[in-house]
Each structure stands twice: as C-alpha cells, then as structure tokens.
Length: 134
Image 1 (cartoon, rainbow, N blue to C red):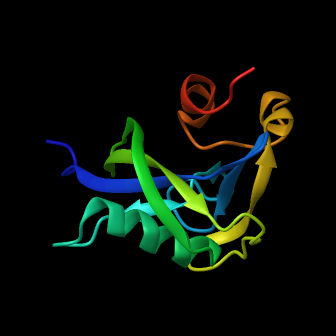
Image 2: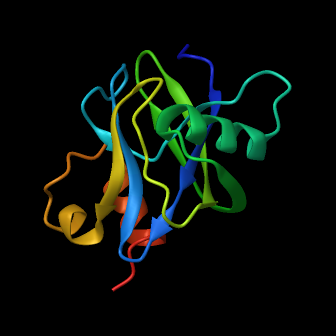
C-alpha cells in the first residue's frame, strides 16, 4: 500500500509573458522550480490555502481566482493531489522568497521554453497546456 493522498494547492500568477515560480528549498523537489503552494491545512478552504501559501512563500498578497488544472505526483513516499488556481497579485509587487522557498521570481516564458529553469515533475507539460500561450 502506498502513501495516503494529500490535498495541495498552487497559485498561478501571470504578468505579461512571465509566471511566478519558486525554487523549492525542502524535499520533495529541492532546487526545482514550481508554482508557490503547499498542503491544505485541516478545515482550511482551498482558496484560503492558496492565498496563505502564496504569502508564505513569496510575501505577496493575492486574490485566488478560478481553478486552472489538477496534477498528481505519486512516489514511494508521497502522493500529492495538487489543485492549481489562477491568482491576482498587486501589479508592481515583487516576490521575496520565504518559508520553504529558496528563491521566488517572475520567470519569463522564454526562459521556460529554452529549458533554462529546472522545473519540478510535470510542470513543463502543465505550463504548456494551461499557462504559456504562443
């Protein structure tokens, strides 16, 4: 029997042709880039979790919007079901890495397309399907 599934959320903030990503400082996916997010606390609403996680990892205040997509990551030690939501941040606010993020910044679609940013599992496909539009 594998690990118990955990509900997680992520926040997708797009500015022009860039998207807010954080570099993970803790397992799993240390050193990889992903949307800011994490586990939903017991009794916490999904949208509240998105806004809390974004603030903890980037210092940005955001308003949670619509569900963009769902991903699932299963390994021998983890089973994460991740609900990724669109978020709206203050237009000129700059992220500052906090909590379990080693870095936080708006990454250009070109950097992502050129493979210059190491993305956590499934991120490239998710970005191509839901976020990056040519």
